[in-house]
Every structure is written in C-alpha cells, then in structure tokens.
Image 1 (cartoon, rainbow, N blue to C red):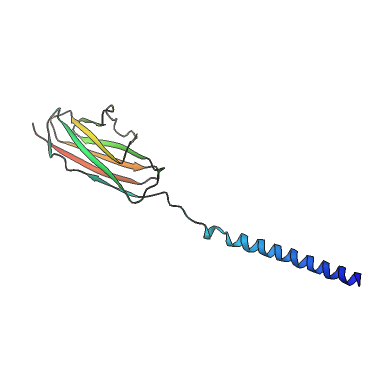
Image 2: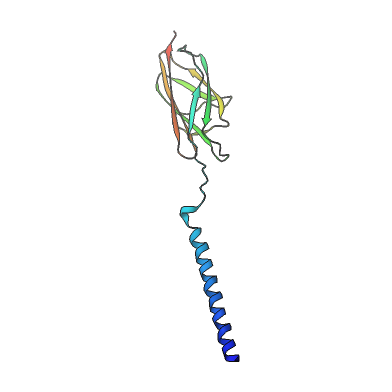
Length: 149
C-alpha cells in the first residue's frame, strides 16, 4: 500500500512539473515580439511661415516668423536649422544669436521662433532654410527677395 501511495505521489509530482513547464511556455510565447506595445516617438511635422516682404534693400533686415506644427508630441524631439544661400549675399540669425554660417546645423530653442535675414548686396536674394528633427524628418522652406534698390 505504501508503494502504491509513493507511485501515486510521484505521478502527481510529474504532473505538477509538466503543468509548470507548460504554463511557462505559454507565458513566454504570449510575450513574443509581434505582440509588444509599440511606443511612437517619431512624429513628422510641418513648417508654417508668416508672410514676408517681396523686396529687400541692401542692409535691410527682414523678420521671418516660423512655427513648427507637430503631428504628435514627444518630449525628446530636438529640432535643427541649416540654410543655403544661392543668390545674393546676406546673413541669417535667430533672435540675438550670431549670424548663422551656411550649411552648418544649429539647434532650435522652441517650436515657434523668428529668423532675421539682413541683405548684404543690392541684387535679388534667394536662400533655403532646412528644418530637421532628431529622427531625420526634414522640411525645406525657400525664400526669395527682389532687390528694391
């Protein structure tokens, strides 16, 4: 009788072990990569620019108001600016910062900001401003000012 009880107890132990292995397997399979919760932190954006004058004189400064419109908000997103001037000569700066150098990357302090372009020649002025974020999204805004001299 004791031998039969020991066999029964041994049989129950193996059933418990099998159930524990089965439960662990099911929980591991249910946590597969396909079922993971995705957290989106890459939000594309648009750039809105207030109207600017069509003409600029040599030495004149034009204010350019820009707003970055985000499709979502991720607090870790950083925005950057670079510009390329291909007609005329001038300087571009943000607030009271020193003048930007063409093709250099500058961090933007906020989603709403003002750029100041100062013409340094009496011919038409053309330049592009590229705004990018820390996830590789980019937007180009082109500016062209006719000479008023």
